[in-house]
Length: 510
Image (cartoon, rainbow, N blue to C red; front, side, top):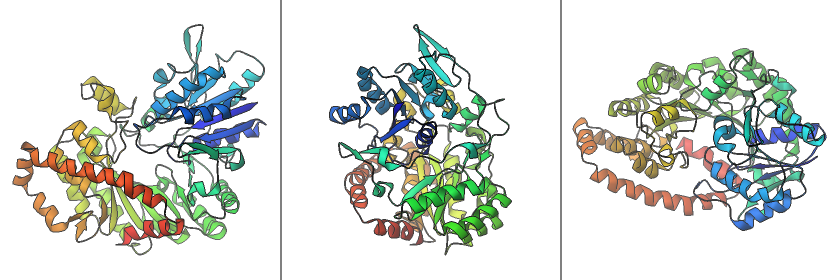
């Protein structure tokens, strides 16, 4: 069959849809993959010209697949509405389809819930043979004005059986500046995002993983499934040889440091021997150990992102993320020993309407105690549809309409989140302004002495009560964000790849 798969991700690194493409190609099907990339300003949608070009690519297909995140659901819906005139079956998959199938089934007749590898193969076989598709597991199907909600099949336990993601770029396309063109190697930006496992045991209330864990209860042997070190190395080695311009790999597992030490040791030894290229990864404070970090750095890990997310109370009582401040500080001490070789970024979440002023103050205090230097990434809370935190907010009236959920805003749209949620604005703004390079002398753009001045108890109480000065400051931030989005980001994107790499490394070391 001729199949077209469409990604609405803002960057063409979508491993999920590339894996679905690889599975279909393994079955002998002819697959085109189209990355309909747009800016991270989610208010922007596709033009008629862009959709017309997409329709031309899809017109001879026998099946169209599309995926989206909550952020890009409106874009996916616009594509679906435009392509319906082709009278080709459309299946809606991806994270948003899994956590919000009730919404997605309003726009299509087929929605894939959960892991799609087995379901897409069964769907294509049924369409080829003109058989009934209404009983295929993982699919919601509209039939005779009824919606049939099939259960999910058992999860794929041996994920090494899944083929490597499809990077045969000759059959792939990319939307750029209003034109859909053939995908080129330079579109990768010198990097590839690579998942080495599936699943997360934590299931924090703000995250879709809590839903995945519930969806597959009783349908799996274990929550975490790891690719073997040999599988990972073979996949990365193939990509390294295929794309000479690659400079590093970005391992995007929710927490790569969760792997057992023996697995990490085997991976690191193979990576150093066969790949010998820098890489990045993610970790969490509870699973950082001296030996793991030593192994990763020795193998070529130059950057690691550590999720803190909130104060100890916020993590425990609001996010149900069982992590202590002691975990964070212990991890910080270990990571700081490698400060000349390893750039460390800490992630936190703010603009949380359930936080109290003391929670934000405690989080700032924790950030002040972490050994420096490091890079601070401040993200603003998004209520993803279907998550536990989203359900709580809808039930208690925190979310009164879809705009309140903030999933159509980017994490770092600081002023927009502050003005939308209007809770603890002074402290939320202060934390947002702390993002960036952290040294002994400053947090982002804020000198240490000024930060201490702004954190005086009486000053905090005064500014939380009288929000006029905060609102004025938020307006200045809006202007800066506009300049950054319209001038600084495009300028950065136009720079040579070598300069981008130098800049990304240097910003941690200032």
